[in-house]
Image: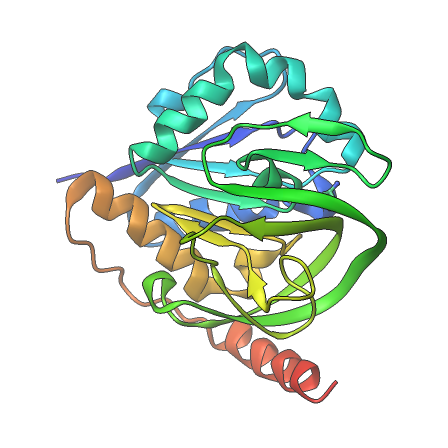
Length: 246
Ligand code: GLN
């Protein structure tokens, strides 16, 4: 059977910090290199809601300004579609501002409250100091258990609700709030993280975990043929060692 995955890239016009879109390219290529079909729909502000067609949704990061700018469009129905997608087990990768957006709300450092999607029980409150830097975390077993190197830059401190699992545990850096050691969220098939930029090109095992999740939801058990990731693995070892010794 021909397999294919349809990716929906939500708000590429606003949530696009640090080249977050490179993650979409990585998802796509790693499917194609294995002979699996891949297509991408970009859904900027004002575009028709096609979230229901997606096997995989990608949401990048944005600053407070962009997060406020998209609220009107979000609450015209895409919020309900996102809640439905999360409940339905659609694979979702959401980064920083996009991750915060799936939660209940974000209250900025200067007291502006953005009511968000409410698909996951988590909330975010802005702090005076930004949490910036390269960081290292280990994913929970349900998300593959691999170590991940990333780059974070956020003022928001995210707190997970009772029983909501993080994506992983911080080994070096801040993660969700700089206090409880958690990083991101794993809820149903949502992978939420503070890690910006080329998260997936730097961490191909995490990319494959997300692809596997999307494929298994659509087709049942999926084994992904191995790819040559030796260059990425060498880079990972080098950076991870530096962060561990920082
Ligand atoms: N505005 C949010 C914060 O600073 C998200 C920033 C981002 O996506 N980098 O917490």
